[in-house]
Image 1 (spheres, each protein chain N blue to C red):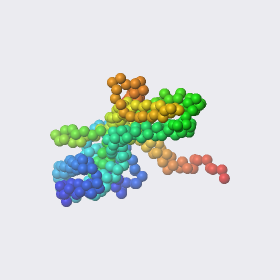
Image 2: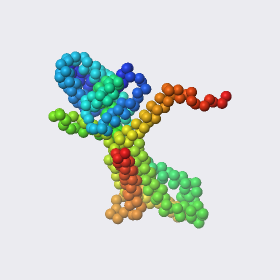
Image 3: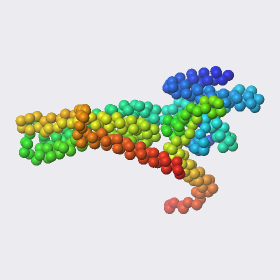
Image 4: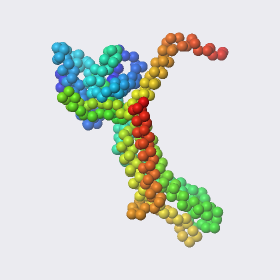
Length: 120
Length: 236
C-alpha cells in the first residue's frame, strides 16, 4: 500500500508487517483486509487502497502468503492466508519492530544524555 | 469517471509498464472486485460520491506504478522459477564438468604428463595413476553435489516453494546420474584418453548411483529443514 503524504516516509516495511499480522489472525480477501487495517489502526495510516494488491502479490510470490480463489459471501474472491514461511517472517519482523521502537523511544526520552561521555 | 473507465485506464497503465499479461488480468480482476465492494458500500450508506471512491482507490497511474515497483522488487528467481530451477540446473552441470575437466588437464600439464613424452616409471605418472579413481569423485560427484547445494541455497534465499527445489534436484540427479567418464593416462606407446558423456545403463555403477542419490539427498535435506522450520514457527 502506498503511504500517502500524510504518513511519514520512514514507514517502509510497515504495510507488510500489518498485512502479515492481520492475515495471521484469519484468511481475508483484499477489500476485507483494507477494512481490517483501518479498524486496527484507528484510521491513523492512510493509503491508496488499490496499492495494497501489489504488496499482496509480491508477498505471495515470495511464498510468505498463499492465495486461493474461494467463494465468500456468494462471490468468488481471492483469499490470502499466511504460510508457515510468512509466520516465520512475521515473528522476525515483529521482533525487529519492537527493537526499533524501543531504541527510538529510548532516544526520544533522553537516552543520549545517559551515555558516557567520550574521552577527549 | 466511472468504474469501467477507471479499470480500463488501469489496464492501459499496467500494459504500458510492460507487466506480464497474466498478471495484468489478475490485477484488474481483483481491483474490479474491490471497486464493486467500494461501490456497494457507498450505495448502502446512500452516499453517491464517486470521486471519493476513486480517491480511496488511488489514480490508475499511481496504482499501476505501485504494481510495477512491487513486481520488480521480487527476486529474479521468484519471477522466473522455471528458468532458475529447471533450465539453469540443466546448464549448470555441463559448465561444472567442463570446469573440472579443465582443472584436471591443467593439473596433468603441471605434472608434466603429456602424450609423447611420458615416463611411466616417473613419480608424477605414478602419483597421477594412483589418483585416477578419485578423479571420478572430482569430475562427476562433486559437481552434482555442489550444484544441488547451490540450488538448495538459492531456493532458501529466494523463498520459493519447495516444489521448485524438488524440480531442480530431480534434474540434477537425472543428469548427474547419467554422466559417465573414462580416463586413461598416456603411456610411452599410447595416447591418453579422457571421455565424458551421458550413458544409460540398466546396471549403473556405484559411482552413478551416488551421482543420482547425492543431489536428491541434499535437496531432500534442504526441503525437510525448510518444512521443519516452518512447522516450528507455526507452533511458536
